[in-house]
Image 1 (cartoon, helix red, strand yellow):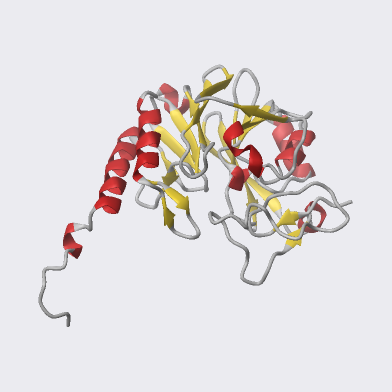
Image 2 (cartoon, rainbow, N blue to C red; image 1 turned 180 degrees about the vertical axis):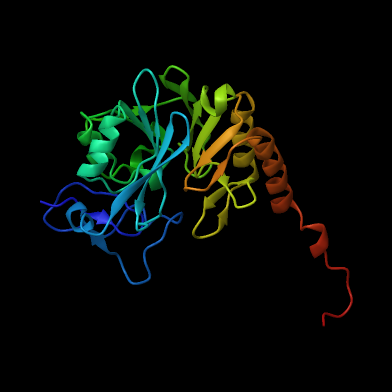
Length: 281
């Protein structure tokens, strides 16, 4: 039986004779159902038309993304450590070539995911690499639509999954929203793998949203909490959810600036938009 994949968010469901009636992830206000209606595909249907591309972001960190772009379009990150490789976030597509390349790079010892929009085909990826454990924050347990023994729920604010590799619960976009802190990243200055929890924009600053496609802003207290969590961690680089959503240096300062900018923007109108009276022409 096929394991159906939602074409809008890329989430894979357990094998079944017929697709689900709807996608749990897309029915939530942070995502959306395609205007043409719910649609599904399968890994088998994707393989003749898609492949995965690889790009090294820095020594020890390799991006993996599907082309042509599928669903949300995020790329995963393969973090190579002496204790085994960690796959950060997940993508929907995997094929024999991908498995061969990743295996040659040392395989995958663990998978960790920032939030439900990037659960993707996490179980299929885990099974391809000896049932690698999948670390998800327990606050987002209700969003797991493909249960599996490999799924490992963690609780609290931090979880070390390898030496110098720590998961930080920031909340925000989702209750269990997580970033990964890599102590050896950016030449030893530290790096954050942030998914959409800290979203890198074209100006190489950050933003924070409850829903990105539906433009629902995040509340001030949640944004301040993210800032408070990150304050105690050393990092110079950020690697976000998409190929080019990275801040290679100065990212801690960029996040601090971005938090202030965001809080000001949702608190008062920008100065140049104050209405000063008089007729509108």
